[in-house]
Amino acid sequence: MTDPHPNGEDLPRVREMIIDDLPEVFHIGEQLFTAEYSQSLYRTWDEYEITTLFNSDNELCIVAEHEDRILGFALGTTVKKHNSPWKYGYLVWLGVRRDLQKMQVGERLFKELKRRFKEQGVRMIIIDTAASNTPAIRFFQKHGFGDIQEHVYMTLNLSRRHKKKPVKKP
Ligand SMILES: CC(C)(COP(=O)(O)OP(=O)(O)OC[C@H]1O[C@@H](n2cnc3c(N)ncnc32)[C@H](O)[C@@H]1OP(=O)(O)O)[C@@H](O)C(=O)NCCC(=O)NCCS
Image (tube, rainbow, N blue to C red):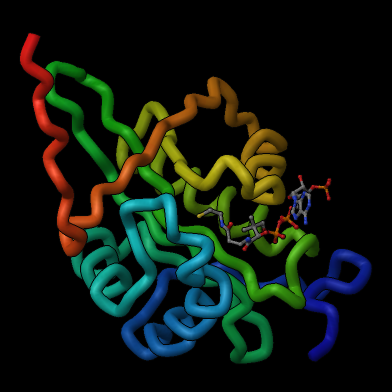
């Protein structure tokens, strides 16, 4: 595979995702959004995830392509919060093939998605990722994101039996 944009030429094309792209996008995502990646996130990468976004927000599902090969994708949706006049753009999944990262494919996808969000009246874009995902955090900071808020995730395993602690009587 040649460099998608040697000397700034021959740039990858960013376009709306079509149904034929679903398998390739799914497989690229499988390489990136592994169980380890998703362990602290409530969303997991599966067929349902892509098809749902593809059906609900087709214009916000885009791919970067070069020589008939998909290099990466961005899948977004919009959110209206109760009691807020603002419309939010939620960038749910942004992924670039591992061997093609750091070649501005992510940037091209993000810029196009941002343009589409604006077109839909979005005033603020939201992303979420694991606190340990330094490449993504750097990427989003480079594109102007700030105000990092940390969340705490907790789990309760319902398949284990929990013994009730005896209540001590005074
Ligand atoms: C985040 C991601 C989409 C960025 O795509 P990309 O095509 O590599 O990004 P670009 O080449 O456009 O931008 C490069 C910038 O991203 C950041 N970055 C990307 N990879 C990085 C790495 N390994 N370490 C540190 N910063 C990194 C840096 O800010 C870098 O800018 P710089 O080269 O000036 O330092 C890509 O790393 C990826 O697919 N990661 C796995 C999936 C993921 O975490 N997605 C985000 C949450 S949904």
